[in-house]
Length: 269
Image (cartoon, one colour):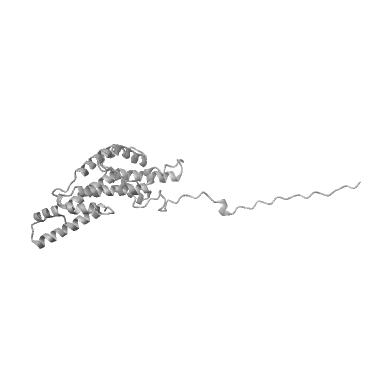
């Protein structure tokens, strides 16, 4: 009997390719803290003794203070430490945590440097900058409502009286700016927001005209009939132009200002 001594072929496995030196030494990429776009970046001018805003927080200026503080933190790319978007890393041993802690303590110092000492004493023990920010926001929410009430009352009572047109407009605009800082309009671009903005502008013009002395009755009536209804700065410009024309006419005709003002109030421009 013939013996089948044929052997089935063996499939040889491919030998492993040796890893290159670059592959063998590859490590997870470390974050670059020297990149200014990284919120954990620290510039040499970022010192804990820096005061970011000109006015310290007190019992009356929280709305304007908070806006100024957010703008200052935004320019330094540190706003995330107070609005809660840049949270504390979970791994205690990571270099990211160490850098985050440095930045967090720096922002805490900036906040405390911008607060009056009596207010700062109640929040100095908070470990996280966002906790300080939220505590201040909660603390001054009710105070803001009371302040807003008094601001609205002062705007309502503001009339020209013995003030010049310039002084009256400047005072009224200052009151409006302070009120708007307490209660800002929505920042979206939707139609409702635009209508609300136009309504507020309309109300400001109305208030400005209502507070004028009776000598401006004529020009005030003309402004009320304008279409579209002018913004308050346009109304102020029209009033001052009319006042200058009155002054020129008074000088040319040799009238006294009191006589000319009375004539203007009766007959209009």
